[in-house]
Image (cartoon, rainbow, N blue to C red; front, side, top):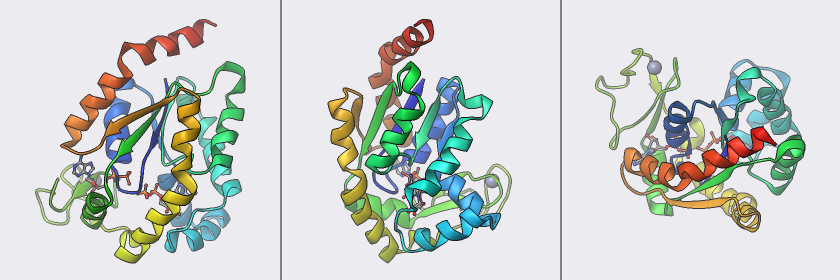
Length: 225
Ligand code: ADP
Ligand code: ADP
Ligand code: ZN
């Protein structure tokens, strides 16, 4: 099954993609995580990307595509994937479609709808484990031990680009560059809009219901073809 999670920054794409990967047995692939790993490793790509990420701008398509294409070529992605945070531009969407031209590109694109005021709350409380990447929220999903991960006791940190000013910039970038993809995928009959308000489990149940047997069947049909 090949899925894309679309939605504004902080909408819960990562949270939902992680829950889905367990249910569907295909990996979550997050462009933001790949980029942050490159920044951490101080690769040339990472050093270049950081300049854009720090101000909440999009990293140029060629850099992002290089990382994503490399990741999608790994064996665990042959059975499918849940793309989280990619594509974010029309160019990226077209490049993705071109990669899978031979056997049909995507099964579904899930758009998470969350209003801006909720986005700001979610992002300002977001904390991530430095060690295992687990996600928390200071109010909605607080760690048991202040500032430490429930799973591995790693240190929790706040992303630098989650500051209020940068978030505002990221919301503008989303509206200008990424939101038009909703229409793009709608025209292809792939778009599923899901209400992103409520507990993560409730949102996840909505997504699974929308995917239903339907999407599973289309994935099977494709393998047969
Ligand atoms: P969010 O919480 O906003 O969804 P991400 O972790 O997906 O954040 O992305 C963080 C930053 O990484 C973005 O603001 C952008 O600079 C860069 N980035 C991530 N994915 C992409 C992409 N597909 N295209 C361009 N830039 C990206
Ligand atoms: P995205 O990947 O879209 O940027 P995340 O999955 O990182 O979003 O979620 C942003 C923050 O909101 C995290 O701190 C997460 O714990 C929290 N969060 C995610 N889903 C929900 C939800 N349904 N209700 C409340 N908080 C949520
Ligand atoms: Zn951890």
